[in-house]
Image (cartoon, rainbow, N blue to C red):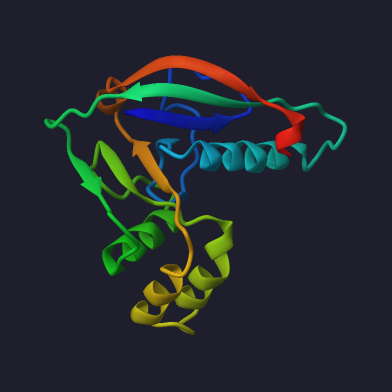
Length: 168
């Protein structure tokens, strides 16, 4: 299966060294099967880098890989936004530590478009049922996150394409 990683750098050899915690599925190397989602990630990452220096020229790249599933790995797959997915995302977003033992996690992206819904859940305005109902009104992209060195062996680098200015 072809997967994409949006970045401001070319990533021929994915690593677990320079990654952020407090993400949907915890510290890991994030990819998607949706090239448009990968483009959105490049824009977000570029924006974060440019916050302090608007004049800095930052390139955007989509790194393309072939993913071959390994059934011997511990894989968690959320088919859609569910109560279990929501609790898992919140647990990961609130911790500076990896809070699970999965090699790979697959599921919907809780992106910035969903932020207000998630904040409303966190603040007790929406209960779980209302939050899930509201989340299902969004077209959620997918993400596949790799959390162990063993899982990174399932990824084979194919190529990198630069995202042009017309995609801004």
